[in-house]
Figure 1 (cartoon, rainbow, N blue to C red):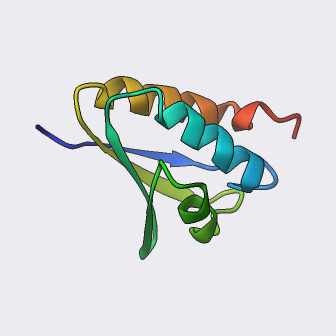
Figure 2 (cartoon, one colour):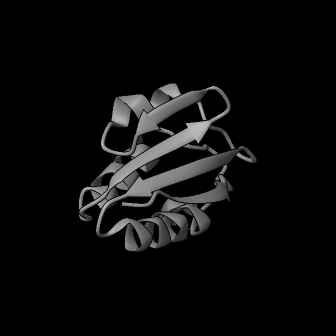
Length: 91
């Protein structure tokens, strides 16, 4: 099964902090896909809040999203929408 890749820039003030990471993990779990998030030399599974926090992703940083599985395209669409909506935060 092919791997789909997208790049997106974090645009909320607090970056990928605990609440945002939790939203991303919950969203990713709704899809039948393995999703990996990469920033620089670090990578983490979208199924792990702790892993995402260890990426230390802040505002303005670009991340790469990799997904494989039957729902890979849908999963990346949803995750990119969440990130572009600044994790539905006010800032």
